[in-house]
Each structure stands twice: as C-alpha cells, then as structure tokens.
Image: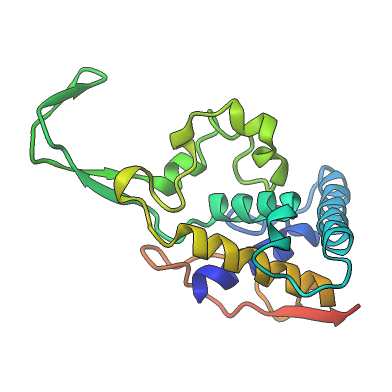
Length: 210
C-alpha cells in the first residue's frame, strides 16, 4: 500500500510550492517564484485531465488508460522516490564492462536511486518535472534509465497492477479534492536511509473538497 500512496503524496507535495522538498536545504531564492508557477501548472493540468477524461465517472481500469499526464506525474514521482533504491543480479558469465572484469557468479548491485538522479540523464534531477516522461523525452533516453520496477525477465511482475492502482488512486483523489501540503509537515522531507520510503518525520496532507 505504501508503494501506491507515496506517488500521490509526492505529486501533491511537489506541485504545491514544494519543488525542492526532498533533500536540499529548503532555502528560498528568486527562482522559487518561477518554480511555483510551474507547480501550479502541474496541478491544474493533472486535475483538468482527470475532469476531461473521466467526465465525472469513477476511475476504472479502462478509462484511466487515457490519463497520459497523470501517468507522467506518477513516473516522475517514482523517479524521485523509487520504492527500492537498488536491485541485484548475478553475472552469468565472465564479462568486461568499461575495462573492468566481472567474473561469473559475482552479484551486481544496480543503483536505481543513483541512476534516477544522474544529472547526465535527468538535468536538474532534484526538480519535479512530469514532462521528463513525455513520449518525446522518453524516446531520447536509454530504456534502462528508468527502473522503478527493475527490468528484464526478472522485473517486478506486479508492475501492471501497481501502475493501474496508482492511476486509479491519484485520479480518484484529484477528482474529489484539491491536495496541498499541511503546515504540520517538516520540510525538507528526508527519507530514513535504507528504508522503504520511511520519512524521518510524519507527513501531513491537506485535502480540500472541490
């Protein structure tokens, strides 16, 4: 359940004036005004898509497939806060990578969190920007640059169900509420190292009926 709720909270925390809320020092500067405008655009665009596509109907496995911007928001949230920081694979045969020998049988740890925040792949990696996952932007990246569910034959087999539940959950929330961070939450939000997205402090979210 945490894997489903986290992207919803992460989306709301970013689109409401909190673009730099995860990590960093949280200080304000002149650029924040521009970020705030972008954040409001993210929120309005996501909520407008839900209204236009669903037309008041409750989200279901069929109609949420047309929520393209919501899908981009979920993916950007999973980029910033992947549920697992890494995956492990075992090398099946001797090989060389970038001049480094890797013997058969060696366990290889792939740093998902590090890849997702590599500035060479994602410019300004700490910034929340759903447009990173537009069809055009996605085509420009290596397919292994986004690994929230792993990849290959041993990727998480629950990915389709997880994505469906996140789409339905976010759409249902945005359909009924305006979301905003609550003053009780402490910023910047910091995650306990080596945890499954467990924050150091309680996170509060304000839901205002539409």
